[in-house]
Length: 488
Image 1: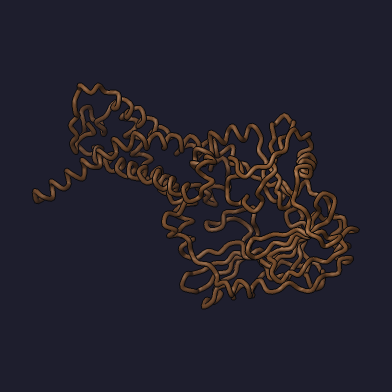
Image 2 (image 1 turned 60 degrees about the horizontal axis):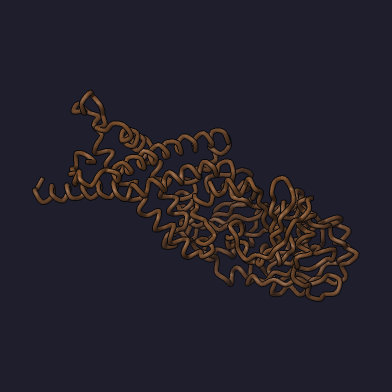
């Protein structure tokens, strides 16, 4: 080896040692927090209400009060017939996200949800007295963008043993979030620190993404340099360290070295995939269907149905939904309930599942359908059991597009191309380990997550201890020489 090459090699190794030593002190604090909070999240996820739970306390439709047909749906994306405070209403959601609510009795616009109505909704939903109701914009449990269309929210504090707080939408008058005292406490130890999710940070999505990227980036550098150093310092051949040991370290450094060697690849994959959770640079954004194709697929709302016939078919339904997502072809009765029913809009006859939704091919211009399959269970690219079954359509276009469609409505549930499937491997599969063969047996998945989380905690806690001891050394001891043969 030429002298210049050797000099560069020594400089590179020395730089790796310095990065790992000094950046590692702070990084290991984050690692310890992430691994510990991740274990909490296994048992107490972030609070959320499912669509079925949101609809559980809704009143059955008073068909006697439905005197006006739904307004013109030419510019609507979805029209819902539901109750609001004892009055049937039409909720019309526009393609751009705008929403208006009109009385199904008079056709007049309905006033926004007020505190008194929110109090009644909360009491009926939870079956407990309401202590207080207050309007809020954001708080820790409603900071995500999915709540934006419901703001301002009404926060109802309930007088129950669980310390429940319920959030009622000012748009729909339905509960959209619920937390209990236990959930709030454990999430401050789980999801909030794990996602770097405090309200002051998360309410600004751009700032939050930047913080996640700039915190995770140095942590990745620490992990990679640590793996390199760990391999350099390991001796498995004949020339071992004193006493036949493969590591030169003792005490906490042994734990740090060995745990890093045994779990370094998997733990680094966890850290890198966590960084990818915010998709730096939007490199995994994937493609979308052309606007014209999406409009053509949605089509136009059909002729108004006979309300008396619909009332006879729907019975004690809590909601009836017309949607352009699937082309205004069908009507859904209680789609969020345990037993949704679907009717053909033109005839009000019971609808059968769509086995081959050929009309969706217009969403992939230039591509031809190469395969259609009905998925009844999760696979590597569809891991959401709550949205099964789905129909998957594969296309031969340049992006290798797959469409997942609801078999009853024909609505596109998700669009995946080659880039999005790569993201599924790079982020979701490596971070949550929701591999079908592993999640099929929950105890096995839990044991797997515990095994590698404990390894990560040993690695990070030992790094914190070693780093603290180094920082605590008296300044009078002077500089410690670093060489490629050792950390100090």
